[in-house]
Amino acid sequence: MTAVEADENIEGPAPTTAGEKADAGQLGGPVSGIAIITEACIGTKDRACVDVCPVQCIYEFDPVSNVLFSEVEAGGGIENTHVPNPDAIGIFGDGLLYVNTDECTSCTACYQPDVCPVGAIYSEERVPDGVARTSYNAEDTSAGHDHTFFIQLSRDVFAD
Image 1 (tube, rainbow, N blue to C red):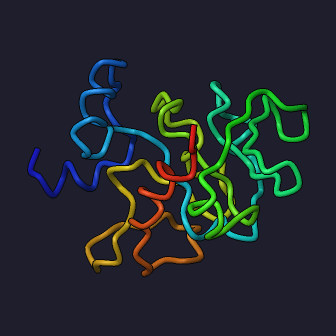
Image 2 (image 1 turned 180 degrees about the horizontal axis):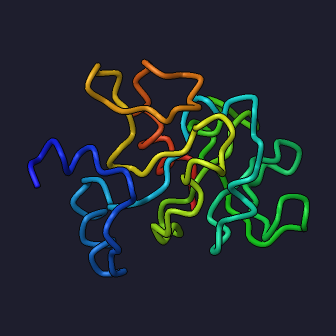
Image 3 (image 1 turned 135 degrees about the vertical axis):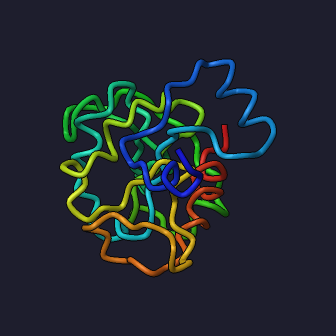
């Protein structure tokens, strides 16, 4: 398989062990399969991704309580909470869902084509950078935009 063919393979990443995930994350590079929610989610927040996530690593911001919270199912009650980084959460606030990259297991469930109706979720290594050769999800309403900003935002928004 050529590098171009490998880049075009969108079936999902190879599974990683927790050790491989930690090692790659410590080096600052992309971690295979970690979900990143991008620009198309802003103002949409369909939350279908919340329902398919087996580890509840997708969070919504509650500005009244100043907390990021996850649920087993959308509207099903709070499962977990985190304190947000005020600078990072201040960018989009409650207009976007956030993936806790430390909790994501790279299962690929949330970025399957039939989950997010606006195509906002990508695996970290496939987040489009606005270059013509980059593949966007068919439903991504922000195709053509550089989405790489959302990789760091996903890490920065969780303060604890």
